[in-house]
Structures are given as C-alpha cells and as structure tokens.
Length: 62
Image (tube, rainbow, N blue to C red; front, side):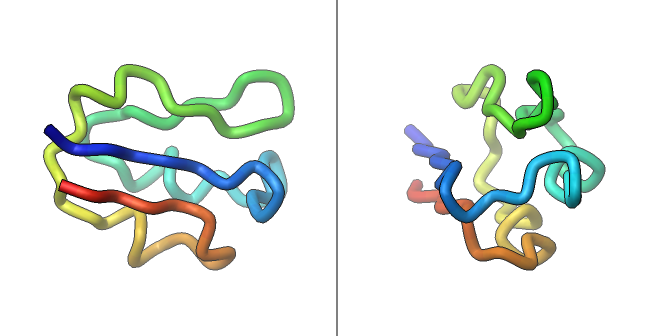
C-alpha cells in the first residue's frame, strides 16, 4: 500500500498547485486555499508529484 503525505507547513497552496495539475490519478485537490489529499489509496506510486513540487512538501512511500 502506498502512503502519500503533504506537509501543510511547507505547501504554498493556491500560490502553487503544481501537484494538482500533474497527478495522473487526481489525488490532490484545493480545499479553500490549501492543497489536500483526496483518495490517497488511488496513488500509483509514480512520484511525478515529488519531481514537480518546488517546496519539497510531498512524501510518497510505497
């Protein structure tokens, strides 16, 4: 099982949102002005979110 975590202290939310645009499984979403993880069980461990995140706030462990 894959575990996806998002460090809200590092995440820039509406200022960024790169993970929302790049995730092929659409597990990231905006909730207000913050990015949240929606349906983490659908993560396929591709790690493209790790490559795109400029703030190093996402961790994926599979």
